[in-house]
Length: 115
Length: 109
Image (cartoon, rainbow over all chains, first blue to last red; front, side, top):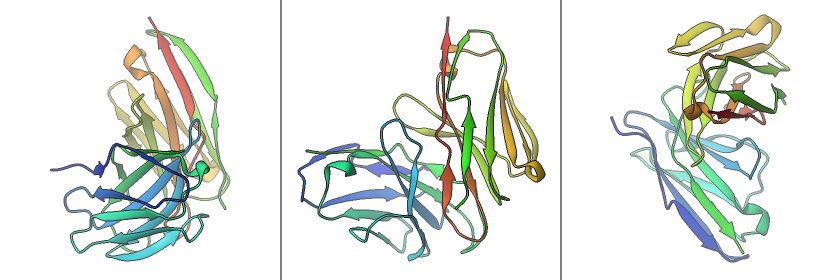
């Protein structure tokens, strides 16, 4: 059984640029959630994808967008990067239905630095 | 939205000591998980425990859903237990998971 993987591990971008982060879900999982974790804080929910459709969103602006592919892997895209976007971005996968709550398994994260 | 409070925020233990971490939440929950975040940022699943008691080696957890709290017990602590412990909950049919701010544990030899 393959766990959740994320790429890249580290990334440095300039303010105003765009970035794409990638996540491969654990084998057999159909749901992917993305989180942003600023230094010294708990992870903050960005959004969730269930079977290729967005299935819930946190308090993040529209420049944060995502995709889920038929193999349930996912991308997080951030446009017009701001300095405050510097954070650890975590992806979690789970197996479940559109509603309800299920155990989530996290990837190692992508550390994004915006200069 | 639901509020999640964790205490204490910081904890320093001598190796071999026991500790109790607490998570209070402001509404009924469908799901509660405890995680350990290691120094490299990886979140490691400890317990999926929306109610009841579970044990895994030196760790155990209890969630009393009716009173809106969960406890994580660490016995005979080891230096490898150091890191940040998070409680995370899901409430209602919405998929948003809310994390507490964590308890930073340092176990010293």
